[in-house]
Image 1 (tube, rainbow, N blue to C red):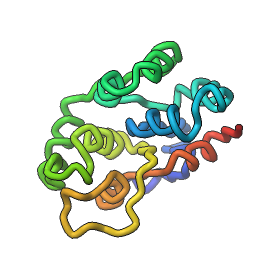
Image 2: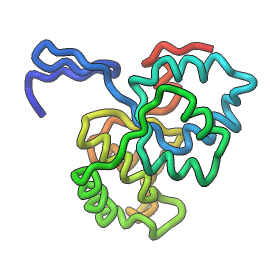
Image 3: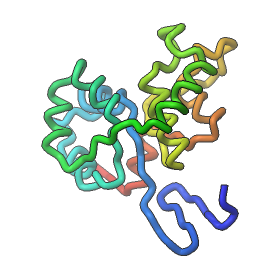
Image 4: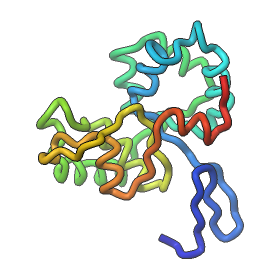
Length: 173
């Protein structure tokens, strides 16, 4: 890492240039928040404020594709907002393939899947943050049972919970 770069939760300063930190959403953010934790009919201001912060929220193409299979209403909302759906680059794909081999992705339904690994690879390459509802208090013995937060920690990728994102973006409902 560049010694002149100072990182905080919300900004990255590099030689005086300021750019907003980007947050990459795990699929479970949309599904869990939309349908269970913060339904849009009960918390419409949350979803409005997320849309207003769309420049800082990245939705990777594989996550959007996964959402299309599971949650049409969420996809319709995303498409109606100014979010950018970002494709996976060759570099990200290679990093993801390396990580999939290291963490034996797909060997267990309890661990991270290939889409989760692509999100972590994106964050590692870009220096941005993964946002998830997942937690893992105890580290499993088998790497194929590792969840997103554990892999992020091992890969030195910033990973936060959704509520921390709300604090970082100063979203209140």
